[in-house]
Amino acid sequence: MSEAELETQLVDAMQDALLNSDDLQDFLDQLAQHAAAVIDERGEVTCSVLVLRGPRDGTVSATYSPTSPGNGPTSWAEYQPKYDDGPGLSALRSGAAVLVPDVGREQRWNDVMADAASAGIGSILAVPLRVDDGGLGAVMSCYQRRGQAFSEAVLAAVSTYARLAAKPLLLAERLDRMAKRTAHLVAALESRTTINLAAGIVMGQNSCSQMQAMEILRRASNARNVKLRDVAQGIVEPLAGAATRFED
Image (cartoon, rainbow, N blue to C red):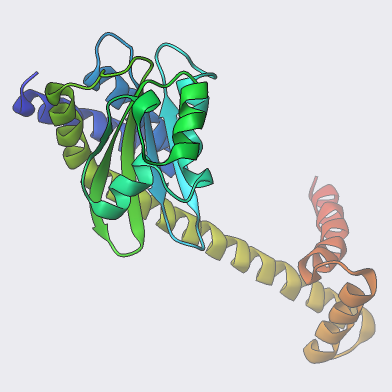
C-alpha cells in the first residue's frame, strides 16, 4: 500500500472513529484495531497505543491483537505504565522510533525484556506520535511473537501511520477532556441546585434565613459524616416524589 493510499484509508478510518467514539478510550480501541489490520494484513502483529495525559489525568491505553486476544502479547502489551522505562517510553522520551529485533538478545531494559520473553514476545517496535501538546505524550507499539519480524518496510508503515494518526488522536483527547469538564460542570450545577432546594425547604420548615438553613444542613452533614449534597438529596427527594404523586 502506498503512503497516499494509507493516508486516504487512515483519514476515513479516523473520521469514523471520532464520530463513533464516546470517549478517548473508545477512540484508542479503534485506533489500535485499525493499526493492527493496516500494518500487517496477515494478522500476526499486536498493536497498542499509550497516551500519557500528565500526573493528574494519568494514562489511557488500548491494545488489539487479531490472533491472541486476552493473553500473550495482548496482556503484556500494556506493560508500559508499570515500568519506569522500556521501548515504548524510550521512544516517547526521545521522539524517535525504537526497534527491538530480538527480545531474547536485547541488552537494554533487562527486567522488561524478561517479562516480554515470558509472554512470548519476540520483536518490539515503538514509534512516538507527535501530538505537539504540552504535557500530552503518545506512543504506538507493535509486538510480534517471532524475532526479526519488523522489516524496513514495516518500520516505514508504522512511522507513516503514527504520523498520520497524531492529529486525530490529539483531537480525540481534547474532545474527551472537554466532555469531562462539561460533565463535571453539569454535576456541580445539579449539586448546587439540590442544595439550594433543600435550603429553601429548611427555611420554610424552620422560618429561618438562608444562611441559617445552610448552617443546619452543614451541621447535619458533619454529624452524619456524609456529603452536603447527599443530605440535601435526602430532603428534596421525598418532596419530589410527593409532588409527582400529586400531579398523577
